[in-house]
Length: 335
Image (cartoon, rainbow, N blue to C red; front, side, top):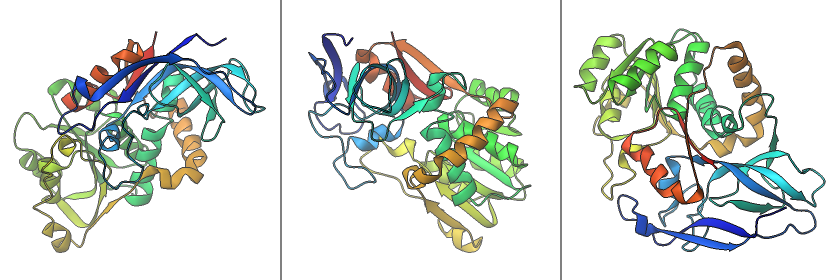
């Protein structure tokens, strides 16, 4: 049965620059019961993603902004506690966009039952969730990856970047990751099989890339934007593809820095293309089959950073993303 209370995190105001504690409202309200055709569930895992910062701004995007006073949007895994829905039974684990709250009620739209025998439930928020889908379609469809090419990925120790590099290795490519700190770089090369890693905190990224990829970058998968994007643009191979996935270095600024080296696209006859993973939703099962196979074979390692806490720990846990404190997919496990 449902708890009598439902703890939620709601958007109190739109942040300017970095997100602060005053931008959130901590709310307790009665937990709702499911009506006909609905199920209720208790949140087990919450997904924390860089895209959340963009959802807080009132500007045109691929999703409407989170409204003032609304429960913060978030992917999560919930355990069904009551059900009046034919597709979901008590005890099922379900992934969906249920928001930052302890208890949910859903009509099942967009909700997917997951099998914990295949992988840890949190994996369905990372390697087998949106980050894995983002890496798969961004690299293979948008990046049009070919066997034997050289791939460079920024934010390489994050949820998407760590998958991009491993998918590229599974497809027979050479991979260089860009990450912050010697420890993260060691994870990339020693644990995930990257061929090399660049610590952007240690020196000149452009110089390091020229040394590591003297023949140029065939596919650059960008998660950070800013100066690192410029460095990569200066090192492109002919007919290179630049995949614009995110720009976490720019999310907390009101003065976004665009690429100054964009003429490299002209000189190298390259292309630069953005994408949104939701456009590939009809093909998620295709990606999940291949990713799941690679995970089962040990060709892809699931990299997760799980924080155990309560719904009230969401705001401070989210900040870890923008401080570069997580390695792999950041998940808040509710206890």
